[in-house]
Picture (tube, one colour):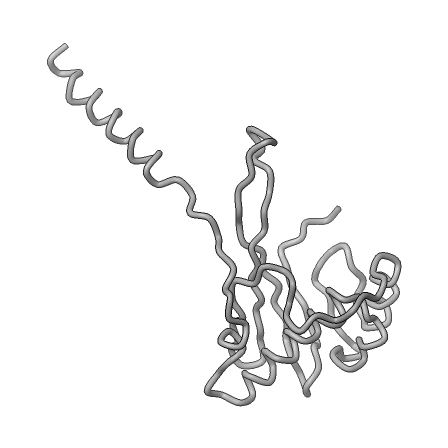
Amino acid sequence: MVKTLPALTLIFALALSFQAHAQVAVQAHANHDQLLASPDPRIAANKRLVYDFWREVFEAGHMELAEKYMAESYIQHNPNVPTGRAAFVEFFSKFAKPIPIEPRVKAPLVAVVGDGDLVVLSFVREASDPKDAAKKYTTTWFDMFRVENGKIAEHWDASPKQ
């Protein structure tokens, strides 16, 4: 029994430490202008292009503005959405009805990261706990875009095939 006491103490301490390290909720960033800033004017322009595309086309459903933001040969890596600007517009036109364009992205934006021709938007995503559907938790969703010649040329995200 004396030899098992240290082992039980260790197990108890580990159990408490797992509770102490519970998930920290993902928080949106309040200052979008700060997220869009960059000392590199090309990166700042790419970040703004992707941000405005997200606001105007994706969130507000103004598919008529897609040509302003997307290359005709746009490549889509989400397995649920077809490749090509025209195919993107056709696909999302089935679901998106135009609404007024907001001055800021409405989705809870965590970060806008630009590196060369790539821009990553990360968002807070709330989900139901698989062990208890009444409980919610937050995680992060990422969309990455490649910009070429001032237009979005390619997109990636973490969507599984549905």
